[in-house]
Length: 337
Image (tube, rainbow, N blue to C red; front, top):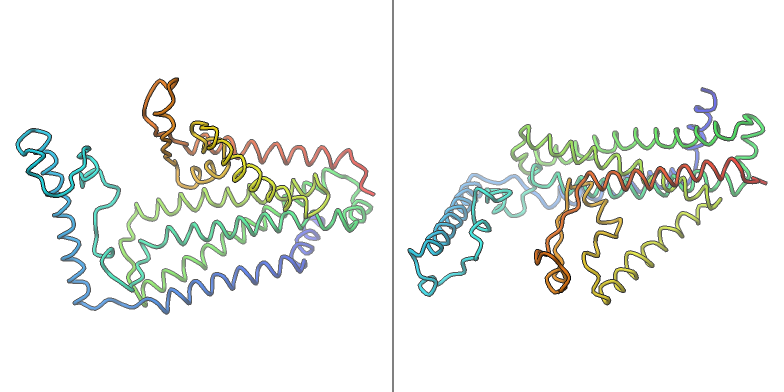
């Protein structure tokens, strides 16, 4: 227990952590202030006009869908249709759409919490993931480079216990920070929606979807924190983690993607970690690859393919687990002097 308390004090006392916390608060404050300044409570007239516009948009969708069905049945000739009607009537079927037009879509300069909470949460997750990776890398990297770990081992000469405590303290601290930051961040925008905008439809489905996204985002934050910690442990320096990420993004996500596209490799996004991270956050991600139809060896000409959260979870957990295990093995065997 004394070791955990000591690591918590060391983590909180680091200037880099304090700087990142200040930047975190600043970024959230600027976002909230900008939203508050650009929003206003809609008047009764604005709400009435927005509701009429939404009703007209829904009626137009229904009319287009009915026209599409009539054309498929032959009741209306294609040459008699003056407006654009898609070949697939499901594209304009209101019952199959993810969300029908609502009044909030036609309110300008009005912040609606129910509509904006999702994008705001993605921004929060991205910032916390970057925060966790950098803090995790610097937390162990600085100690290894400066000899702080050696001094700690003189007091507690058990390498696996020391490294495990460091990682556990780091992940626990990031989890608590993520929970507190999420509550303060989303709570502030909920208040903005109540005071200077519209709360929107906050039913059980909304909170369930938002909570699921937040839970997946929290796991992604903790995994990236552990990856930063592990890579810095393997490289014995904070810059090792930064260099590894920069190298991966430049060499693989940009360079290898470009080469594979030049070589007409089918379904390139299946080989990119960013695709699996997006699929994990969203539950699933659907891609389209036109090369699938141009490949004479392809069995099907359907260029659509999906990456699910299940495969993403297996890959992300496997990668983080493998790097963490390698870090512990290297830390146990290497000379720390």
